[in-house]
Length: 210
Image 1 (cartoon, rainbow, N blue to C red):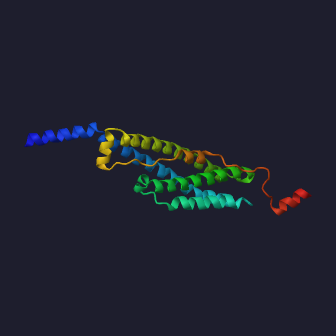
Image 2: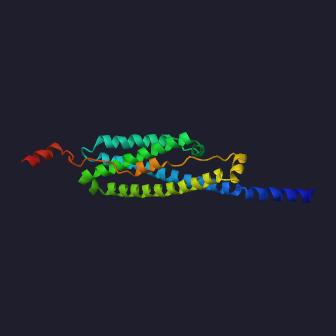
Image 3: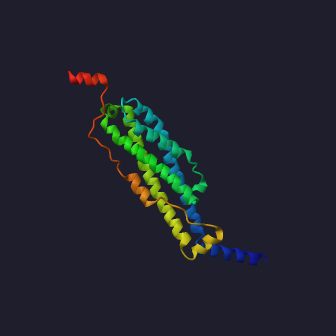
């Protein structure tokens, strides 16, 4: 019986290996690691926003609508609980993706609008925050690309024969991925009208009139 059990174990092991079970395990773990890195970078960005908002508030007559959109977008993005189950739920994943995309767009617009304010651009604290934000956005892009590749590899394994049989047997299902449409929207440069210069404080305006 001992030898027979050993043979059966060996056959089962070879069967699992040949049918893609190990590949499924490897790909699934890679997705989890890639997802954790995305969340780390999104959290880093969220932590930068309060300091950025406080710095911009110090600029006289800065566009309040732009600032409000950043605050609201951050609140929405951080209100979504990024649980491990989220990457297995297409609807929840899309909601999370949309919220992060809205924050990306709001921050991008704030950076563009800030070009209208020389004093703000000359503020060392603002420049440091801007550099940190740009670096974080780059890291988000890299982490997101790794995640996209990991999910693609996993989904191909789940759909391919004979590994798809193993996937069905052990409950492995396709996972949602970042949508191409959303990627384009995030990378789109916001349109801002630079025709009208920011209003000057009343004292400066009177001085210019003289």
